[in-house]
Length: 248
Image (tube, rainbow, N blue to C red; front, top):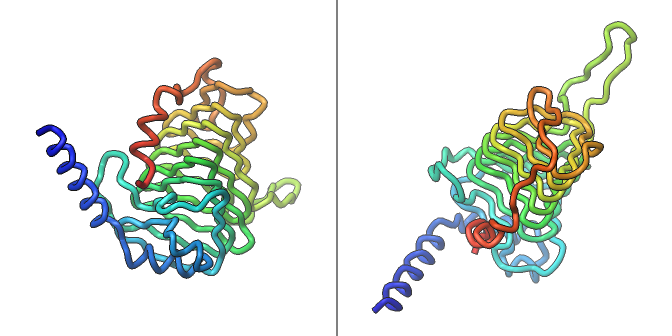
């Protein structure tokens, strides 16, 4: 009888998953943003409420196109309840190298002429704010924890009051592969991280850390090196992550 029980539970999960998809937004987005041959495969799924402020930009998916390979509004962490405030404003270019997943209540703004890229299994946790006005690169297996923000602009012109020098409003962000970014981290303009980097909770990053080398823990306000020879054990988690974080 065990196989009957497993089959029943599997069917129940599939029905629950089907019901959780925002089919109106999913179908509208795919057929608006992709050619028909791509759109009919529904590579992007949306879950729950989301506001499309603008879809004047373009979305690129590199590699083989599969159903539901990219998910917006996925419930893969606690809490599982949504405030229903997710929003996407796409005026520039959003590129996915392959599968990616974006949690509950995320806000993404990609302005005109800006470029944002997600590597394979790139992830935004719940309630993450991403504002891209120039360039943001999120590496392969780079996970950004809940309540964090990734913003490549100061939003306002700043100057040196003694010399009169005007500082750049924006500067590209490049997050390396296998980065484990904890919750409530601020990734600000000009941040560049090496591969295999861990960033502690509540840190503020705003410079190039690649000279520190790989396998480092950084953190603080402003973030600095805390420990060498420190890395997330991705290999021990990959099977579970692939199962729980892929859309289907």
